Image (cartoon, rainbow, N blue to C red):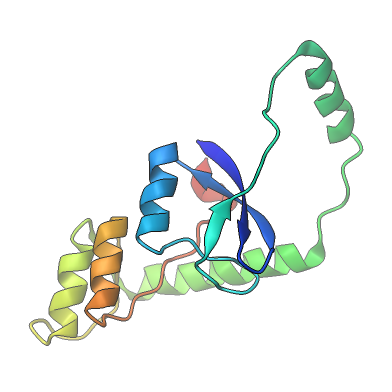
Length: 147
């Protein structure tokens, strides 16, 4: 995974995690990157200092970890809401796996009965669905999904 410091055209700063440098480029080209603060898709990589691991930096990270701030309760509330949303979708919709784009398009054009579905789609498939007017939303990635 690669972490990039990003900024939007409105100078909001945030970070993004990507499977590779190529993944960032593909998502940007597909218009899938969005500022979490204002929603603009005009997102660029910001300058970052390189992360070099030394024994001194490990000591510093350990000492910083022991003095961490308490979690923001708003963050926990947001995570709880996202968990509930994801739970409602996964309990009430059909999992279609990597056939998501195909199934969503068939439902949209009336070739299949309307129903809730969820699954996986590539960035290219997502862009194509949106271009066709298919209404889709990503399920939130939760911290426990990364484990």
